[in-house]
Image (cartoon, helix red, strand yellow):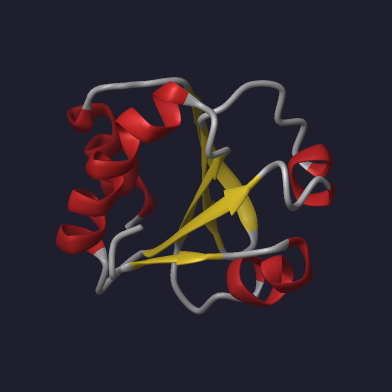
Length: 108
């Protein structure tokens, strides 16, 4: 995990994401997921570029089943973009960095 990406849990989700004073990206992932590992460096790069304006987080779906269930996560990686506590966009699977940049720019 990059230095600009924080691990969140079911217990901290509301505080870290829904009550966040800035837009947030949640990467729902699991350690055994190949595409999750592949997209992780891209997320870390984006956290370096956008980290001052967007909160970057990861939520391990194996350790935290409540939050993925609440948001209907059926496949990982799933990235959900939040603004003012609301879901703005959701992207599932391995996608190009440019697609993620586009989604982040829409958040701001």
